[in-house]
Length: 339
Image (cartoon, rainbow, N blue to C red; front, side, top):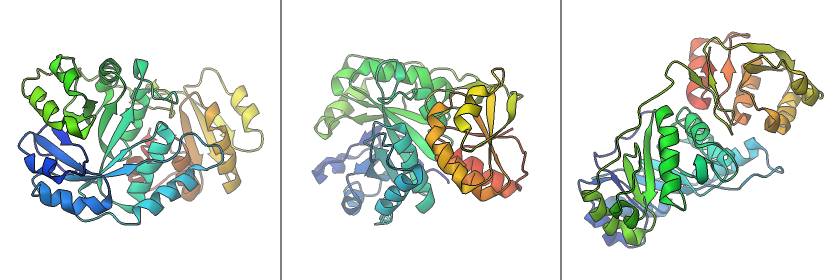
């Protein structure tokens, strides 16, 4: 999908019921958020269509063993099919502490819409999300499945700054921060942040004034362009393109034992799918996958179903050949890494 270009500014206007707050939209603004589909038309009119309007989608659920990945994607699709108005140029996904749920929202959005997506990701100490996902892993996945901008939020400025510094070398998309005016006034650094979203709507003007004199931190240099970033959904892994892959591991009733017996020297585990029942087994064992995985299936439909379940970026080594359009689709839709 082609991203909606932001408008050269650095301030994202937060959603608010006070439409007069949007009329102050100026050259320093990059986008404006609307709280719901019903609010998009009024916000677009208030900003006089000078910046893209983002429809906020509040994400669902934390970790829940009783709901499958596909069922959660279906819930998001039901919400989105209620209507995305023409005035919504982009979707702004936020509101969950669970990275797996956020990823399901992104997949659902790409299933039903070609809209540009921004995602807000909450971080704590050391750039770790509330349920243990590393920010590098989160950004590494999101930037390859359709998200064009990640906004980091957190309880403290230091947590956000540390997470930005940690993930910026590996980010190939825009990064931003949800901030308080006091943080900007104090000159706290937000490395490589291009966009700023006030934590509270009533602080918008104070944040705007503070940003006018803000001296940005030097950008963090890119790193590891010669390696493959292959997150497993929780941790980030950096692989040589010639990574050693294990022998095929059949996904079946003995998957737990087979994973424990897998070669220690393999950089990635190769999982083979033969039936739809394998998908159920695979989903119940994802938590055991501490190494990157290479997925293979003779039937493309089975491979796609496995890609939808796996929360990281899976490898593909060509065991069962796919035509180029399908390879491109799986890579762009699910972040699959073609070796």
